[in-house]
Image (cartoon, rainbow, N blue to C red; front, side, top):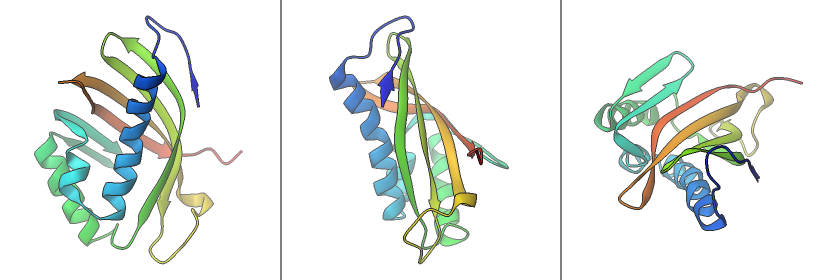
Length: 140
């Protein structure tokens, strides 16, 4: 994982704290825990997936509860940080790659690979998602 300089440096401890958010998302998904997933977001956070636009922690919680009971039943996710870019005091962009591993599968199928952008803000000494968006990874 690399970090680039914009308006400020992101020190190693902050890099680790930011990257830990992606680990917590993987864990929440593995447990199909809509509360833990939604808890990664700011109260007014936004979740954008292909064909999906959900705003607000409560709406994200409900969307994920329905998704875990439906199309995401039995799935897991994987994700690896690529870079962290400071946006200003208390705000960073985290770029990751990974994807949804189909129910019963042990590996990520190429057609399910994604790249994601995470805009995180610091609230009460914790990094939370203001915006999470992903799209299919290029095939090159």
